[in-house]
Image (cartoon, rainbow, N blue to C red; front, side, top):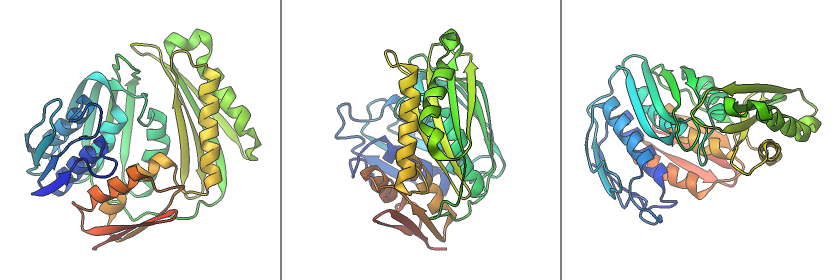
Length: 340
């Protein structure tokens, strides 16, 4: 039984998501204690429970301690199934965080796994937006040989959520990552989305135009993709993506009450400009997200980053408990040395 101290390092919910995901993927039982012990509201939150219970169904696991506020959980997987998985989220929990936790386990299935989600939010704070997930995260997985197909029937925004989505994951082992050189910058894309409730106020256009005004000096083609979609409540998001020969960098912002659409787009653009100036091959959020897949690939993987955060170091620490190998992190370079 692998023992994980949930208060280690950054001490947040990512320890739970990473540990349970890799326990399910590798078939190694684990116990996590001191879950979010230093947080204002310690223990499992509802969004963590959604992930734990979905992974338990996918890996036929027995679970103890899966209740709201629990400070310890024991997870014993019994093998990943190739069946479909339906997740009903009664809150505005992030579906992108949920899917990021499920994909590593789905790779171990004997056949393609389709994950259907009803409820939750596609675009919410403290989580990747839907467009960052599709246009940055899934593109990196595709480049590593991980096949996925995503369908969105309805976006969801805070507080009611109400998203409708499905993701199919092809089983297999990812290829090693060698993201140390960007290559030539090919284009910049602006993905600006908003609820149908906001169409009359031109929110998607205003977000995109503000982002374009700051990015137009990049001496490369800037494309805009606008989307209005049905939803249960008003909401918006803006994601800007720089596509290089070898990688993708992204930055995103969420619309909020009292925040002008122009400010949402402009801030997303400024975040991307900082990522471009950093010289990194992945943006700050993608650094955390790609680490489990580097380890699952085995062998040697290398990643040039803008900075190595405490969050990333904590994620590396958790991963090393489940997969044979070690991370080496110094200055602006992360390497995974796998045992195979």
